[in-house]
Amino acid sequence: MQKNSIQNLRTLLALNLINGLGPKRVKQLVQTVKDPGSIFSLTKQELRQVEGIGEASALSILSFNKWDEVDSILKDTKKTRSRIITLLDPEYPELLKQIYDPPVLFWIQGDANALSKPGIGVIGTRNTTLYGRKMAEKLSKELGEEGLCIYSGLAEGIDSIAHKAALEANASTVAVLGSGIDNLYPRSNADLANQIVKNGGAVITEYSPGAKPEPGNFPIRNRIVSGLSLGVLVVESGIQGGSMITADLALDQNREVFTIPHTLDNASGTGCNYLIKTGAAKLVQSIHDILDELPVAQKKKGETKPSPKPIAQWRKEDLSELDKKICETLEKGALQIDVLADTLSEHVSQLLVNLLQLEMKGIVVQKAGKMFELK
Image 1: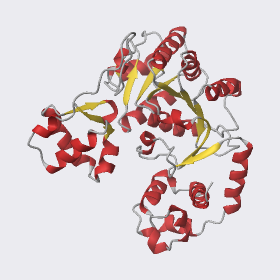
Image 2: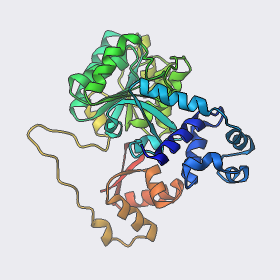
Image 3: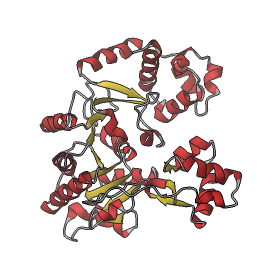
Image 4: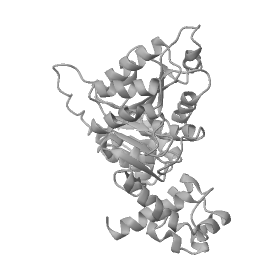
């Protein structure tokens, strides 16, 4: 590892240890400062110039003195045979980076490429019914066979079934932990975690080695499951619990939410029915109800992938300069609205107005998760 990379890693580990700073402020810091490795060398005045960094945050950075703990974490990381991926690394998944509060860094065992594969989060209760288990296995396996990565949380119940079904389909699957990489929860899923890694998937966590599976960790880690995904499938859930929290997070992140209907006497399915009733989730009867909403090509036996659609039609239209920039950018491929805004250095609100006009002209199509592409 090069000297600059080591310094950047130590800096982000240190920032991650500062109570009250939070991933949103750290993200703002690393995006604003030309040399992230020099953050701890900045003056209070320079820190205050960064959006979101107030007096208290600046003083917390300036008074940081836990470098021994930083080095200890690095040593523990080597012992766990894992590595750390930070916001500054090219392997950091772009879709996750665009959420409001992406993890500053995370530990990983397995193939980092799996984190950037188009996929869907499959989640649900630990207290499953036969129907829930059957649907989790069926849908996860079929989605995996379509080439989607299955993201979930390695918990008992629906999570475990989803991971196992993906493995049966020889598909990639990623488990997001609510504990340290060396402190799997539940322990009974240690073999499953090993199989995920061996099959080309990954196990990740934003909690440092040795961290216990505290109850408060799991709702927080759920934003990563949804953040990595193009959409989230709630297979079975009560009206309260982690799955409903994840569904809310997915909606906040402009991800699509899907769920399956349950009988009225199934208490474990009341949350799913509620999501359908309120219009928060799309009812799923087959995987095509999911695939039709995602920016992915559906596989058909005996057929090759369709050739790319022509993308020069927009050039025949009388468009504004911003519309032309949008189309030129989308010629390279579909983009999520936040990524498009960053690329063009424009406000999301302004882009949505222009994109709506382009949609009405039949030039641009909006897909799930606020993904836009040329028609």
